[in-house]
Structures are given as structure tokens and as C-alpha cells.
Amino acid sequence: MSLLGNLIWLIFGGFLTGIGYMIGGLTLCLTIIGIPFGIKAIELGWSALFPFGKQIVEAPNANSTLTMIFNILWLLVVGWGIALNHLIWGVILAVTIIGLPFAQQHFKLMILALLPFGRALK
Image (tube, rainbow, N blue to C red; front, side, top):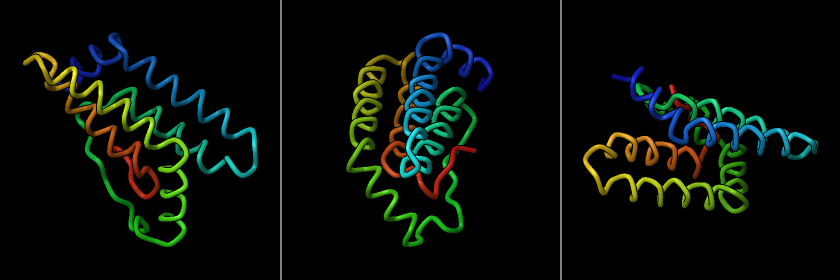
């Protein structure tokens, strides 16, 4: 099921979502200050390509001070916009029965878009 879900996901928007994350990440990596955020955006892009069959996993340092500072900066600058986008698409897809599995993936990515540092999709 996850192979079929990932294939349909890629065809109907997952590819563009992943590429968008990666382009944004590469743009952030142009500055020294943006490198940690760019790397995380690229990781989110890879996660957005194949979200089916994966769960959000917390790293052991998920609640460290530096991770929390990065999460707050991310949330204030770009995280809220990306999460809102995933929320809107998740609600739209949840209207139909066929769209429910894809809505679940958007809600999963929404959590990662809010607080990505210290969390990964594995």
C-alpha cells in the first residue's frame, strides 16, 4: 500500500512539494546563518517525496536548548506558512474518502513543518 500511495502522491503534487522544499533549502544554504535551516528544509523535501509508510521520530536531543531556539526561529520565519499550506491541503483532501490517506500525510508533514528540528520522518 505504501508503494502505491507514494507513487500516487508523487504524481499528484508530492514531487512539486519535495522540489519546493529542496529549492528553498538550497536558497537558505547560500548564507552561513541559513545553513542549518537549509539542511533541514532539504531533509523535509526528501521526506515530502515519500511520506507513506513512515512515522515521525524524535531524536534524543529533541528538547535541547539549541534545538528549541532553532525551532522557534523556524516557526516564526517560515514554519507557520508551510504548516498552514499543509493544513489547507489536508482539509481539502479530507473531504473525500479517497483523499483521506493523502490528508493524513499532509497532517504528518504539517507537524514536521512546524517544529522540524529534533524530529524526522522515518
